[in-house]
Amino acid sequence: MTQLFPNGWVHYLVGGLLIGSGVSLMFVFTGRVTGMSSVFTATWSYFSNHPFFQQARYVGSRGWRLALALAVFLGAALWWWWLGPTHALTTQLPWWRLLFGGVLVGYGVRMSDGCTSGHGICGLASLSLSSLAAVCTFLVTAIATANIVAALGVH
Amino acid sequence: MKPASFIVILLGGLLFGFGLAVSRMVQPEVVLSFLRLQDFGLLLVLGGAVAVTLITYQLVPRVLKRPLFEVAFEVKRSPMNRRTIGGAAIFGIGWGLCGVCPGPAIAGLGAGIWILALALIGIAVGAYVHGRTTKL
Image (cartoon, rainbow over all chains, first blue to last red; front, side):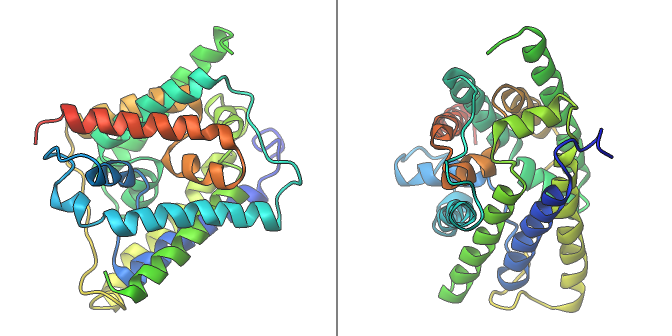
């Protein structure tokens, strides 16, 4: 147990249950499947007239998707204010890994039309085989990349 | 969308972001230690979230004819094709590099990890490039 979870396991499980509760609440009341990656394409529809961004699925959902993103931000802020450490959390990752990794994440999740929440949570809970394949694929490439980067000693 | 639905989206998002912060998945180091197979906690995050959502998605549409505030339950199915799988592969490479995926990029800022704004900007740029280079 301590080998699998050297930092404890309760907070991981509780966090997951809370996330699932949020996704469930939104589904029961609004019928919406709430993945987190679509907001990044939908928001561009405010700024770009390019036909890709002006698709009905993005223009029609951009309002509530932005509201959802804002609420996710506020939910984490609530945790910080209520239960979080006095000093803000931080990360030691170099800026270029965050930025360039982010570009690949943004391109990949939109091409795949789903991320860890869209395919991982909503897709698996929908018993979607394509989402299962997507989850297995991104886990394999992510594990490979993280280990290769660590082996190369990249900081 | 009805105002009442909007309020539910806000409440659901609050739970989502709070849960992400509780799980510490907002911290790239936590994600990377999972990907390096040093701490399997993220499987509990995913497992816990899927377990609750699975029950809801499978059970509720059989009990209720429609969602409480709207007309229909959304059914979203990605096709099993090159885009879905190839996109996932590219996403994974980026995730392994930065340890940040879309939800934690947003929630991480709320939890005070300001530098994650770089990942957020990166994701927005990647989504833009994808939109501009993809044929409808």
